[in-house]
Image 1: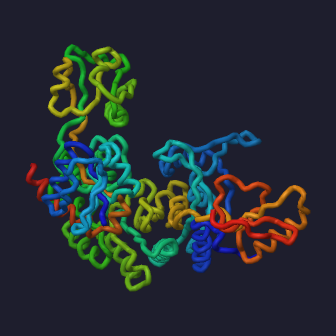
Image 2: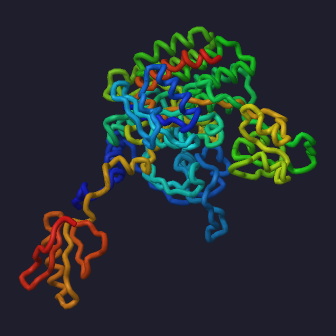
Length: 378
Length: 209
């Protein structure tokens, strides 16, 4: 089968490029049903991006849902095998409520999951694939990396109430240092400890510049847990140093995923021309424990609906050629003329009347001697 | 070129004055007329005036790289943006107000009128109070007077309008001021310029303490 790449939309070309990339690294394609038992989402509601799920009753009376998420389904069907790592990628539609329009939306996602005996190599491989995915979408791209454990450990030390903790995490995700300082002050956090958190959220640098600052910032903490988490981040950064993706990486602690599900390395990808993050991922060992699995896991998803406007402006013409014929023309002659005109890949539409508003390069009419040009550029 | 969305009106003029003092001037901005976009190639900044409640949308959607929005708008709409600086101007507060003779009866659902329904809902949810929220878009002070609501949640600057209508503040929900916000992707790709503006504006906000 020959595929004319120019006939594909930008996001469709991206899917081909990404599938090929993930296959090269030994990730196998995971095909799943559009539906899943609703129960799975009720038990893990907080993990979902939106609360609402489209449900229906199956023929056997079970309450089913149109998938709002792919990761939960993959974990549900995962079997623990000590020492083994399963590497999967998917390309699925998910159904979510847009937080802005409050209406359901079908979103095409491409993503991958690396589940099992996760080690530093696996984390680096997934980060590399995330960065390479972004590069295939646009050469101008950035992958923000953070260690969620570091933010979590610092905040835990402040003994905030659940409500304050949620507000603090929102401030972290907004790089809102002034309100962080205020919340810390109102809750009796010592100024020098609050300053650590404030400087942490302000960080947005390449690893070579960010890591010395981070080391200095956390040096005074005296927490062995923080030291261990910093060492994990340093090991990942060191392994990615000198690779093709190093230039794209930024250390930025405003990447905050749900602490109940995620832990360790979390990341978010941006490409120039798209106003929001197009890629989101991280280690989700806590979700694995909640779903009674011992294995670790890391993965990411790319939201292809965000890429729609990256492919340049809309097509200049609706079609290359319009072929006008009449009712009395022999259908076989019309078919031969269409084949002839489209032989070089041109788009041809055969019409009895010229459709209103149609933009075309050439207007042809079927005559006794074949197709004859009667107009251009309209 | 960095696109900056400024809120139309008095607050926008004050904020522009801060940008100008910080070295990002574009004198045409203050010229009377119907133009909406102003550019200074020397400072690589393009300003545009938008309705104050729309600034956050322009920034979130990337039409503006940075902008200045009131904290009331940010709390109400929760846009996915970075909030980089409290400009400490446009200071007021979101408050609960009622008629002078109002006495709360916790046995009844409290009728709350407001333009800021999300802020009002969150405030009373944190107290576990059952409310009937009534969204109105103007002259909120009228609601308790005509018994449309028991209380209102609205912005209070000096309190003069409340006093003139025999209303008084019974609680402060949250202090409000103008905030510098940035689009998350722009912050990655125009980082140096945005951080430069934050650094230049910071000392000016400290003067306002």
